Image 1 (cartoon, rainbow, N blue to C red):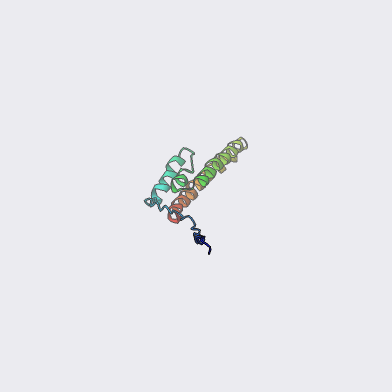
Image 2: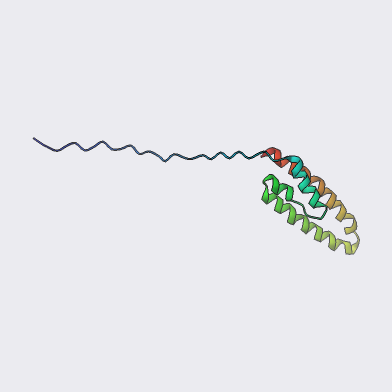
Length: 108
């Protein structure tokens, strides 16, 4: 007779459980985002409202993009058309960026 014991059954492979962290942040205010976009915009700094809404990349693109457009408008002032296009670009950026920053809070 064989006195050997049977091998133990193989242990089942258990996949590690995934840990889900659910962070609940208070919702961002669209009005605050619009104000953070418009008030610094008076001083030619746009994009802060987008950063507040969580779109840091979009905010930086708007900030540096506006400064590039403002530089081109400054150069256009030497041929006098910049005195027209500069304020038009500023007003358009003030309106469009404030509205899109407020809407960005709703989509997050």
